[in-house]
Image (cartoon, rainbow, N blue to C red; front, top):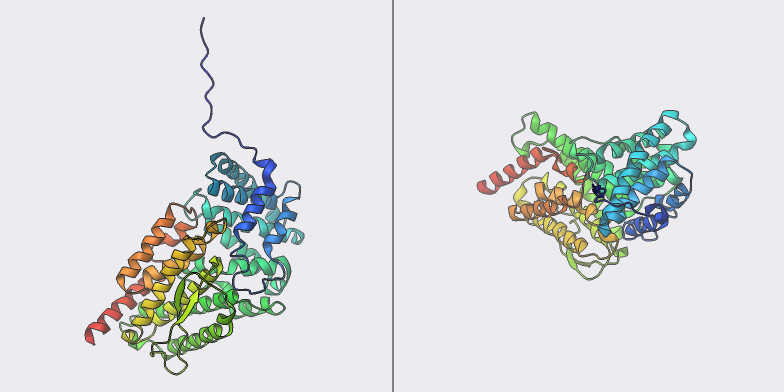
Length: 411
């Protein structure tokens, strides 16, 4: 009697994920607890995350599929549950055509849902390894929808909250391409905040957009054959000093409201009389991931601005301290327990990339690159954005470092 072979069982077993929508979404929202109100002492009166349960309650729809995909992959990654992660990819595959169908209809009443779906797919690609740079099209998609709606439509409600959330991602994506993002225009930096005031975080993103403008100008001068940083045009130096004043004002207004403990890091207010004077240290301690990420963005802005100033030997000590502060903030974020540990490291990737290219000394640049390498195994489509060859004005950074070395030798 011939015995039939046993059926081949798939290694990936089906999960009961559909019964746990609330669990996955609750975990996803909880993961943002340390980050959702970053830079806002009282928090925004509303947040884009608050709409997720309502979108999830809809019958089959693009936002529902996208929310399931991202929240399941977030939970499955943290729990190392292969079946949940496999289901997440199934929902992702359903969300993509559903979103395309919504966009093809062009119905303004579905705008919020389309934007929500694109944002959640963007977060899906933070962990997914579906394809190289798969995170980028979703960031561009969200921004394209916001730009089509116009800055006046982003002054209140869900679109305003998503706009505030996606600005940093837009900045990261633009820097990977060495370009200035449309959201960095004066209109986009003012009109959406006419009715809802900016938070600490919003103002730091403003400064990052300004720095992008300076980097693009300096990069143009370098490519036009300016071989000496000291020959940079006066307009650029005027912009840089103006930005220094803005970040000094930011620090003075908000530092007293940031409550942190457990780890002390140097935070350096700029001298109002001489930028080359070594500023005093303020002892700052952290208890939250958001505080560490916020202050490390402040250090990133300072690091880039100081690298564009000459003569470099006058600023090298401060550049080194800002680099060290970014690395210390990353150490704190990595030690954070709970769901926020999933999103915390994501909030440090830009800072580490900048430190790896623009920091000082070389040992600290290597340490920042090593920290990025450790994240490469954990994150998917997002990490490839930080591997872009020549991105983040890498050629300009190498040029600035070369000039700094030459100036040091001449001194």
